Image (cartoon, rainbow over all chains, first blue to last red; front, side, top):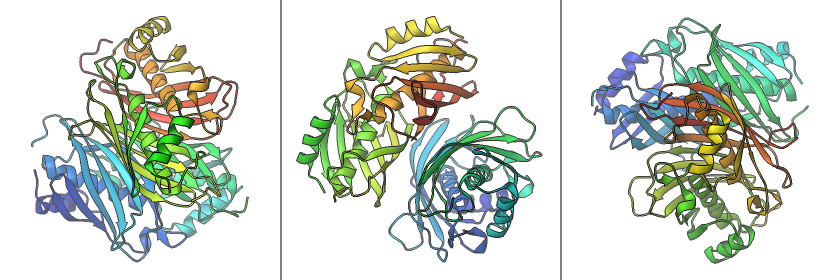
Length: 137
Length: 137
Length: 137
Length: 137
């Protein structure tokens, strides 16, 4: 297992270009946040799909690292996302991941994505990560 | 319908931050390319998942615009991606989209993603776009 | 909106071959149950994948009918399922659906599937239904 | 590798309830067929979603057995399906699978589903199978 502080330090070092911040991690779950600015918008004045996919992927990764420790080589094997509503261009995107399974070689989780402070989700994703053999735990 | 030149101009104007280039479009298909540099890599020296998701999403969007014309408000409603192999950190990612359906309100397509020059795909995606009513065609 | 009794009567009439029973419906959710016998098993002594997909699809349909009333022509537009564990060959499969969105033309929900009495899910699905225009509600 | 005859015999013995017939297998692909009768229909006079999911799952399984030999314990780990059109209630459903990857522990393929004789697909699926260790090949 890894703490929020350890994961945040690892993310900053391994993914310096990633704009996601770890808000919480633990108990097979994680919450991450992505600031929204002009770079994240698309026509219609809303957040672009790839930004939401990125938040989903990072939320899964952080939740998994929270369970198995810092295993950089855990990699996404699949991701499915449904877009449910139009995100606000003025609010951070919040991704809340709950892990459904943490096996020896595979972890599966779901992520609900919100515009900060809103009740209705803007997207929902399910993803699978492959955990390399001999990952420390 | 829109030409490659029209779509490239629209993409540059509407998504200035997008690093994808349109290589080809037409006949219910499209090919896009994304340069890979240090910003696109992740631990293990490979291309990060969100970059591949972005290429898949853009390839779909471009193929759809090629069929229905410049309809900025066409939006992704779902995307499913499977990661199949480790992309080279030194080669462009190429996304080849073939549309499976172009209906009045919904378009569906599949995208195969390659490291340039390789035979084996690195990922495969299927996505759905919602087309707004009264879109010019 | 439709009650459990109305939906059960409709399902028995419209899908006489369907082995799913409605356990509960309401509040944007539904629980359905599928008896498991020799017809539902596959090599390895476990429940076959298509049975789990069927339960997921029916749970979604029932939850949606619970919200919008008996709209027979609501149809699945996509379904994504992840298999998480080996279901018991001796226990009913229970599908618990929670709707994520009920829009005018589209409804999206997630379904967690269990072997009855177990804590760990055996599968998790997300599906989308198209709701025909002028559906009574 | 297994031949069409070996796979058909195995399917008949291991899945006696399965109504799918193997039309062709080999070269990382497979074609299966499902007769459509009153049991396969749903309101609206069309083929029910779970029947299409079953054909997709079986087409994948057959294509994989064609590559790795009769490995009964290969199991689906995920399946994503998009429904593209209304299948005819009077025509067999044909599923054509092409494998995208056959790895040591995972195989991924796509399946296009047709009403026999039609050009436009009625559905498209992508699925992943887990191959047990020490599977004979």
